Image 1: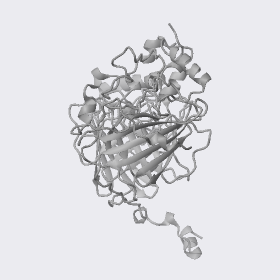
Image 2: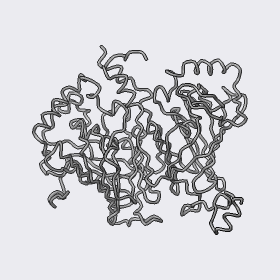
Image 3: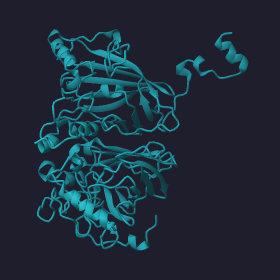
Image 4: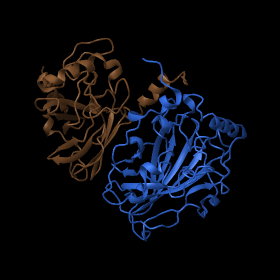
Length: 251
Length: 299
């Protein structure tokens, strides 16, 4: 007996059988999809955003890059390879606990919390207590220092939250395999709820200094549905210091 | 925990403090989940208070240093050359007035230290400069989360957000944030230890009452009180006084260090319109530990 018939006969509501679009997405008082909650990816993009096999300490994974190709300019490839070779000590986030940048913050293997109000969206990340304030309907600030997490501005396109991010420094990587960008990075993120507990996350990456054309990563975000779900603290820098300076002073 | 009503007696203040102009008559708006509306960006005043007869602090020798965070009365904090008049800009347009700040209980500002713990913290302070080891470096210098008190009075604003069922406070300082859960009654299990603690809250009229436990025994109250214990239990009261002011009061109960609770007052003043946060990256550029201790062995 197929599953559809079983649902009908038993009189059960089988959510899996209902097209995603038809399911109710919770909405805010203002009528927008309610993204409030704790979310996390279930992929291995933090290690490598492209298809990759396993290594010691690196889980294997299918890539999140559309077409699995990152269109590096030829002269940028050497830097990417060098990053990869030195990644155990050079990865800004994994080895040094620095703010992970965007979009990497989204797919670090730690949860994050979206805080959404009428006028504002804030994203709190468990990793390194990274934080993004995302003013809605405002223009990018001018003349401010380049930032690890960039300057984020949000707006709604229908039921999709669109975040335009600029003003990056050139310090962060896209993953532990050494994919990198310059300070010309421009990221456009799209958050679309496909049902109550999933968001389709898309990030278009444009950086004419490093890539020959824009490219895109796509992945679902999963709501932490655990009854007691709560964002805790991963104070990466603190633990790194505890390790590196445990026998201090050195001079 | 209970305190006598005397604790609520208004104190005359040494510091120059600021509040919104003629705002007390304004009513408080309510949000769709019926929370009083406290949203927006504010600066904080008066929470980093000095106890009576503070001990010598080799990091911040207040009695000698006119720029000491403890001594300055203009709320500009310890980095005036970097931040300049930032706090005053943030508070643009607001008149000076008097509100309660600093230690309000005990009234004499003598904290009820357990004598042996007071000796211990004074010794700890002496060993902070030069720092004896990593444990004696203040958390702010390590770019770790600051706990509830060691954020900035003055320059770095705080933004309050109220999604349904929560109050979220976003600090400019070191991209810190904390969430106060309004729909939870029980604290997290005892094994979960946090820099910012575990906060559950409820509204009593226009006052948000926040109960916080599960601290990790590392966060400081101030430069003179360089740590509080894992048994720290705070009760904060955020009272929406008017559209521009949130009065703040915190009861600090740490039975390992003190024989009884003590209480600090302060307040939040709404920042000038259209002020925005910019990133406060900390660890990413910090050379502090290397400068103090020398370079660690290569990895």
